[in-house]
Image (cartoon, rainbow, N blue to C red; front, top):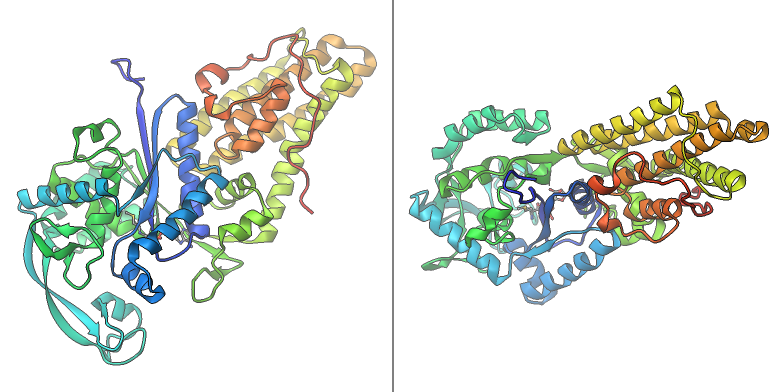
Length: 518
Ligand code: ME8
């Protein structure tokens, strides 16, 4: 809550995904991570704006559409339909879905362009490119170098000679903002994360920035340059401005959510987000996002995922095998966010069976089963609280603080490890207290106290798991609360304290939430 009584905002974004490819594991990953943050922050009572969407313009999309004999917008519509079907299947709770072909976006991009013109940050010059006549394709110097074709000036696609062409282009004065950007990165240690990426960007900026070509005359599928229709605004000004369009730019209302709290991206597009974007914003007099977090890349069963290898993991294939919660958990638990990792079906099964079926599932089943067997599922209250009970409470409260801190730092794996530690503590607590012995000996005061602490621990564990596994967590809570639970309405301020369950409350009988995976 802010001092004036308004709710604090939290604005989280994913990249906008190109529509010349179908969704795959990589797209799922960033979007799931953003969703977990959004859900966590909503539970914390923040006014959250979670944005995802698609990047529709550019030469590649125009060419992909031509190859299929359809208009670019038709291709875009098809891929948009795939994303819009996919996100609910993965329990993605975005507040807005931006399309760069929309009218609102065109307005925003042209307004952004105008601001850059007004600041004299854009000028007209000549741009050198390579052109393959047979393929009718333009290649940049970098693309030729990356494909090992620069030496002989060959086309990366058909290996025939390419020719150098010059084209008129607008340029953004990136070099002018080099010092200001360096100062910003140095003064704001949290601006780029993780730290290794921050160092990478610092080194790149220190090595000197060149002005950036920001328009093309060689294709038409894009936003026209205001007042110069022969030029289309080149991809990055167009794409990056989406983060302003969605909250309302150029209307002043965009300031309600802007600056973004975090742009989540893959490491492949770090330079655009941590160098070009902040310089554009500085030039336009718009505040910079608070943070850019570049996560690592997934390989699949040890191999680089690529279209040509045909091994890109597709959502349909994954969702046919596992439900959304299992995928969400695995992706954020398996690899520390920021590092590269490998997706393997064996590792997924292993983690699920150990941490979810064995640890969380057992704690829930045993606790509810004992409560049913010894107390007809009724919680009686705390008649004999001892040091080990207080230690359990302290552990649960420590988890809440540390999960919060981890989420502020996008350290998803740390949050999950911390939750798992409480679950293991809960299982040990059962062994140490041996409720079956307490029942046999007729030690009702102690038995009731132990059962109460178990159920309250489970309830608070389920709350912390909710952002990661919304439907499983709701199933856990529904058994504990013995009634339907609306996940979206969960709030830490209301539900997050120890002692919400009241004596006399009757829980449901256990029914497995994490059945073993064979
Ligand atoms: O780059 N592992 O779109 P895009 C993890 N339109 N994440 C991966 C991945 C992998 N193997 N492969 C892709 C674009 N990603 C631009 C962005 S933003 C203003 C414009 C994820 O469809 C990762 O988040 O190529 C990466 O940044 C994104 O997909 C690239 O998606």
